[in-house]
Every structure is written in C-alpha cells, then in structure tokens.
Image (cartoon, rainbow, N blue to C red; front, side):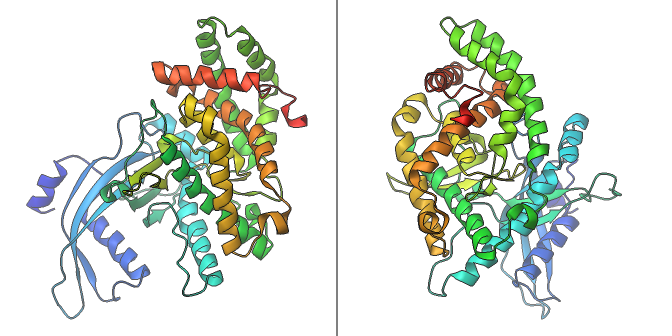
Length: 424
C-alpha cells in the first residue's frame, strides 16, 4: 500500500485493498465494454469509512469507499484520473446477525436481484422499446461487483465471502429522509412512482413472456420461508407493543383487537404475502423510509427517489409495498389526507409504464383502480404486522410513538384489525 493509501484509509483494518479495487474496477469496465482486454486499472489512492451509523443496518456491514484511479490503455497512453464513490456491503461481523442473514439467504437474494433480475429487466425493455424511445431508468444504484459465497464455502482471502459493491448515490446528491418526521408529500409521490416503474417492468416481463416470476427467479423470498421469518419478528414485537399500549389511556379497544389477531398472525401473513394473480409481480417487501434516498430536482412538485436494500425481494402483490410505505413512513395528517391521491399517482405510473411495455392492465388483465383500493385495504394489515415486528424502531421517540398510535386507531376504526378481513 502506498503512503497516500495509508493516510487515506486512516490505518483501519478494513477488508478493502488496492489490489481488490483494481480487480473489481477492471472487471466492471471490461464487462461494460469500457476498457480493452489488455488495458489495466491502477488505483492511486482510496479511503474507507463506515457507510452507516452503528446499529443502522442489521443485515449488512456497510463501508463507504472513495477511490481515485486511472485506466491504462495497452498503448501506454496516459488516461485522465477518475474518482468513484462506492458502497461495499459485507456480511455482518456479529455472529448472530451473520447466521440470521446467511440462513435466510438475505445476501443471496440481493446479489441475485442486481446480477440477474436487473439485467433481465433492462434487456427486456430494450427489446420492446424503439430506438428513439428513452429507456426506463431503474431507480436503484448501479452495481459494480457482486459475489455470493454459500455458507461453508472456503472463505480464505480478502472479500472472498458474499460481497456487493454499489454506486454511492450520496455522491450524486441523494439523501435519506428523517424517519421520525416522516416523508413529505413530494417524497411519498416520488417513492410510489419509482416502485410503480419497477412493478410494471416485472409485471410486463411475466405477462409478455408467459412465465411466472417465481419459476424464473426461484431465489425470491418464498411465501412459506418469508412467513416464518416475519412471524418470528411479530412474536417478538407483540409483547413490546402490548406493554406500550397498556401505558396509554383510551387504547383498550385497540389492545383487544390486537389480542384477537394474535392467534391468526401466521396465517394472515402467509395469505397476504402469497402472490395473487393477475397482479403477482416482484415486490421490495421492505419498502419504508429508511430504504429510500431522495434528491431535490429543483421542482416544487417533484424529486428523484432511489430504492435500496433488496434483501427481501419477493414474488407477491404490489399493494404490500404501498401499504408498508404509507403506514410506516407518512406523518398522520398526510396519510389521512393524501392516501387516495398517492394511490392515484401510483396507479397512473403503473398503468402508463405497463402500456409502454405492451400490457394494458385494465384491458388485458381485467384489473381496475377500485381493485387496487380493495387490495390496499387488506395489505394495510400485513404492513401493520411487519411494523409490529420492528416496533422497537418506533418506540422511544415521541413523534413515531404518536404516529404508531394514530395508525392503530385508524386501522381499528376502519375494521382492518380483524382476522376476518380477508373474507370481506
């Protein structure tokens, strides 16, 4: 390591080296047709720092890497220096978290999403769209490198276990939102329009090629396995929620409704996660504020949104993503006032994108806006159960605690907190 590298890395024992970065960038540029086979990459310097706050990410250890490098053509010409900001996602160091991630294959799913699903969605739209049509830009970071190591594989050498290297979107002005305050209306619209494009692409791929996506992508979070994982979280969160509600006067009816739900939670999760035709498609399934980044586009009405953390990618129903976002991440007043408008926004983007890809959602699939509203109502129950599984995220902050209480009261009043909801 050069002197400049030692200074930039601060002497920390990071599992990132100049040799590994050179090999990773060489492979990427060749794969993208940006570099001749005989050319080489030389790293001038790089720095590494934690990519998130302590405790912010349970499913990965995240490093932020900034690298300065040159590409040397085979003729020896001098290339201009390049700078790149990367996110390196590694398995957690904590033994319990590492076992949890590898046993449930969270690392496999995210790596397969970037290396198989995304390239096939991009190839699919290129085949369908004419040369003069602008392609659909997927609202996700660029993937530079991915490697999956199954548990038990030989892991000798630096970064020989599962690793995912992505573009650091914060270098392009993307920022996270404040969960305690919740999303703004502009951010919520951008998030729903972003996920609508991804939903539409996977829906069109299924319809146009006539093959269920769980057959095409068997690594997607299967309903039975996902149900078991979520049920464990719900069982852990329910006592915490009950203790919290018992200390708040006037919530006895809500507490009773949740107690009535408890014996049926596993069956409810399984039923609501199961793909339902004709709208079965690829869902994020962890679609909430902390897995999104936003960038101001200089427009009072719009902003850009990027969707991160695809470890729970599932073959399911689209309203599960919508409900989790609106239930978990919107301020109460905004959720109560703007949910119909937000569903309209999502529907408009979903149907317009699907039409561009040759699928008429209403005409070909017989699925209408009022059915989306019905499915959304049911999906709110799954969203609430998933929130209960992570209830510790909301507890301890006055703003998020009140938002949780408001959601529970609203869903109770609307009859959503019922084991009979699915029969309605």
